[in-house]
View (cartoon, rainbow, N blue to C red):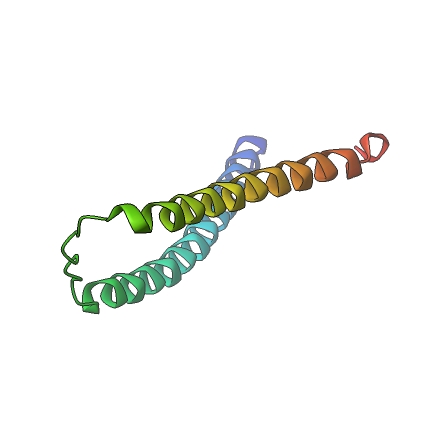
Length: 103
């Protein structure tokens, strides 16, 4: 076998090996995609199985209920503000916990 034939054989073997690796990675990706598709199909079926809720009719509030309704609204707003502040605190703590020297 001449030098050209040997080089040609090595290049052909390397290309077959590379194609095999590419095919293997595609196979692994296809398996992962298939598992995600089955999970999403199950979730979609669960969503479609729920019955549609019918909203209740709205009722006019009386003046006597006004104070309690305003109190409930204020409590809801305060709870929302507390959630926002807690989330902000957690994010700041995560940022502070990052060790820059280990990068």
